[in-house]
Structures are given as C-alpha cells and as structure tokens.
Image (cartoon, rainbow, N blue to C red; front, side, top):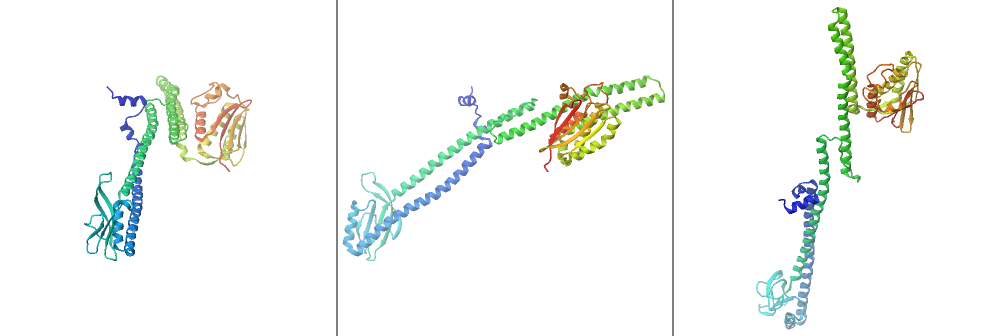
Amino acid sequence: MPRPEAAGRRRLGLPPFPRLARTVTFKLALLQAGLFAVTAAVLFATVYASFVGYARDQLRGAIAAEYDALAEDRSGEGLGDLVALVATRTRGAGAEGFRYLVRAADGARLAGDLPDEGLAAGWQDVRVVRAGTDARAGKQKLEVHAGTLPTGEFVAVGRDVGELSHIKEVVARSFGGAAALTLALALLSGAVTSLGALRRVEAVNGITRGIMEGDLGRRVPERGTGDEFDRLARNTNAMLDRIQLLMEGMRQVSSDIAHDLRTPLTHLRQRLEAARGGPRTVEAYEAAIDAASGDVDTILRVFASLLRIAQVEAGARRGGFAEVDLSEVFAAIVEAYGPVAEDAGQDLDADVEPGLRVHGDRDLLTQMLANLVENAIRYAGPGARIRVSLDRDGPHFVGAVEDSGAGIPEHERARVFGRFVRLDASRPGEGHGLGLALVKAVADLHGIALALSDAGPGLRVTMRGTAVRR
C-alpha cells in the first residue's frame, strides 16, 4: 500500500523530496541560505556588541555619577551626612536599583547593603543574594564601582544588571527569530523555484525520450516568456528541425538511389548479357565494353551529383563563406554560356547591376546560376530568348533567369526542385533530374528564396537574397 503522503504528492504532481533536493536550483537556494546565515551571524555579532556596549556604558555612567555624588557629599557635608544619605538610599528611598557600601578608614562597616567581602577598587561584577519575599528576591548580579575617598573612607556603588541582561536577551531573540524566519522563507523559495525548473526539465526529458524512440516530430514547448528556458527550447527545436531535415534527406537519397539507379544498372546488365550471347568478335566485345563504360559513367555522375547535394544540404560548406562579388559571377556565367546559346540558335542577353556583393561560397553560387542557365538553354528550344538579370532592392538582391520557351505548368512548379524530377520525358534535352535539386540546396544554404513564375511566355526563375551593405 502506498503511503498517504506519497499518494498526495502524486495527486499534486510533486516529485519526491530527495529528487527535489538534488536539483541544481535547490542546491543554489541552500547555498544562498547558508551565505545569508553567515552574513546574518556576522551582522548580529556586530549589532549585539555595539548595542550591549552602549547599554553597559549607560549603566556605568549612572553608577559613576552616583559615586561622584557621594564623594562630593562627603567632602562638603562630612562623614555623618554621607552615612545617613547612604542609609536612607539603602532603605529604598534613593535611586532605584542602586546598592551601596561605606567603610571607615579603619575598615569598619558604616552603611550600605553590599557584601563586604571581595570588593576592591575599580569596576567589577558582583553576585549577591537579594533578601525578601517579592519577585525580585534571590540571586542578583551587580555592576559595582568602588574606590577610596581622599578622606580615607571606602565607598562602593552597585546597580542591578538585570535590565542589561534583558536587553541582551531581547536582541538575541529578535535576531534569532528573524534569521529563522528568513531561512525558512529562503528554503521555501528554493523549493518552489526548484519545482518549477524541475517540471520544465522533466518536460524536455520526456520529449527527448520520445525522439530517441523514433518520434522525430516532437518539439520542446515554449511559454513565450523569453526566459532562458524559452531560448533553450528555441535552439533545441531548431537543432531538431535540422536533424530531422538531414534524416529525411538521407532517407530520400537512399530511396532515390534504390529507385532511380535501377534503370541504368538494368541497362548495364542487359548490355553485358547481350554481349555474352551475341557474336564473339573483337569488334562486338569492344562495342559492348564502350556501352557498358558509358552506363558506368552515367551512374558515377548521378552518384557525384547526389553526394554534392547531400554535402550542400548538410551545411558543411558554410564554414568557408566569404564576401563574393555576385555581379562578377553573373557576368562570368553570361560570358561562358553566350556561345553555347548561340550554337543552340538562342539569344542570351544580360542586365547585371555591378558591385552587388553577398556572403557565401563563390563556387556554389556559380554552380547554382550555371544550372539555371543550362536548364533554360536545354529546354527553351531553338529561337528562344534567354535573359539574365541582377538588381539591388534595398538590402536585398534580386536575380532572375527567364526564357521564352514552353515554361512549366503552374501545378508542376512545386515539385521541380525535387531529386530525379523530369516533368516530360518527351521534351528535348538530357538530364537526371538533379540540376534543380542542387540549385535548391545551394539557395537554401545561402538563405536565397527561389520562385518560379510565368515569363509570358516561358519561365522565370527569381532569386532573392540578402546583399552585403555598401
């Protein structure tokens, strides 16, 4: 049977206390409480010494004033008046709490109720027994000042220190109570803070356990407070998004390889089987080997393209980013592909604003633009017009490659950046459907937004990214 208090904690969602006590926040709360206790003890000792010292000075001041008054009375009025005055005050008609002793020069006790034994000149603590039946009867501690007058008499004046002891007790009790209350509040605050932190950490642990079990779609919730837990959740979710993207990319690459390399491998097998069953001549074998080598080259090119896309998507090239003159990249591509377009019977022109710079990888940006221009030349057809442009739009750059060919139907544009996507096998040109996938990977790596639109007629590919400020 579970213990009642344990069942109550489970109903309230509270963790066991030993687990709570092991949290970092609770340990910090204990450390702060300990530091506070040490600080309070030092403060208490300082205040206590000052306060008690002040009260003792006041007590001694009153005793010294009484002693001086008696000495003055002796010098002015004579011994008989001093003895009478002390006797009167001893009977309770004098100052409250004072006790006295007057001895003659020969040691004879003349007046007062202080004990005669053990008194010496100067300040001293004396314990006496108060006679009587009231509440003040019993042991009494006195602060006593004694001395010998110029006329030879020994005079001692004492006063009860009960008030001073009471002050000490009040100060100690007040500090003790305040310190205990503060420590209790510190521990309670630590427990509450630790409980809140522990709940959020447990939430993260639960989500990470689910992710380890294969649920990659789970994310750490944010409260919208913008505190360190929210920032940690945001960064963790961004990391999980990235990991999920990479995992999906790997899964997609595996799937693509399994499905799209089957065709060239099948062709290769068929060629080899045909060569084995065909004419056994040197010319036939050389032709079969040349055809098989072509199939192998095709497979290697596909592998190389897939690996390059995977490398770009993994972000490994981001560490080599530098400032790149994008205008020079556009101009170089136009200059390199101008003769190619001319051979295809097409017109390639450009409108590039000079001096536009970006932060990125020059080789990848060149590859991205080259793929777009190659696609336009390959699919626009003879007589088409191809135009490449680059302009500044505030803090951004806007690049475009457009042609006057057949274009891409609007409902097909969303999937052309996928791997091995070939919209129409009957269209002129060759390819494995990986060029635009590499374009998309490079654009994502550089934070460039790609958009496909109708060039009326033809296709326009727009690239919009952040330019380096001048």
